[in-house]
Image (cartoon, rainbow, N blue to C red):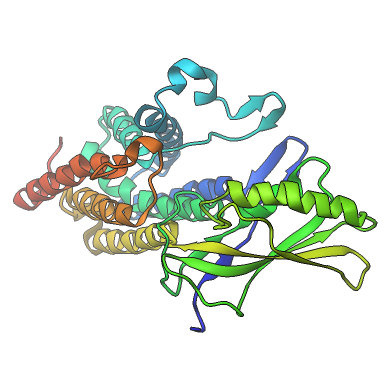
Length: 370
């Protein structure tokens, strides 16, 4: 067996929680992305002799446009039924019964892109020197790439936007949703859960890999209660999360024991599904894109041909997005059987727009107000 055969990801998406409020890695990385982007924009505006206070205004435009655009884009492109079935959930970051903070669940990058394009058009109408529409976009997309990298890293922590099954050495088995469900169920008798490779069995085809799930129960939990929880609730979760665990509906295979602290434990033998870490592919690509665009800007700064950076951004980002979608699972049921999924269909016009803008920029190297 190869030294690096697959990675087990069992990190909680939540940093901490207090009552109905929980701080998640996704939300933190989302916020950090905007804070870092603001600092980079300060640097760019200082070097170009533009007012730094304009960055504060741009940041507000960007935050509002990204959140509203991404949320509305997700609903329009992927869940239009929410407009009729549950319109309040579209923009409310919490649930009522029971009350708990959830954040805005379901954000689409294409919707965020449309929101940003519209918001910056509104901003550019102020006719500030050196800040026409394309000039602003040229600077903004540099930091959009940086923010996108952190957002995709947040998707990885959430175990969402998962890739297809793979036997690639760096494939990932996402088990944190499974282990969290086992522990966090109301009145759960489980103290903690850990997952390890089962090195005694060979890996299967199509990402099927052997794993051990160790369930450690709380002190003084009776053996019968533990046994019932294993064979009912734990069995249910292993079958329910069939995108991560390949239990095939079989009866639970486990070995029970008492650990050194006197706690009842069980070692479950099952199979995980190793997948392409598509979120990390996109995150790393966005970091590289950020570096490329920043270096292009840094060569000539305010003398960079108008539209050059924006055009390259649109071509590279949406071209890669189109390609990476071939490594991902469908995000929604209606994509099953489609030759191209929704993400790819939405990427095509943005990619073409990038080509047209780049051609225009190269033909008009003198900066032009648009």
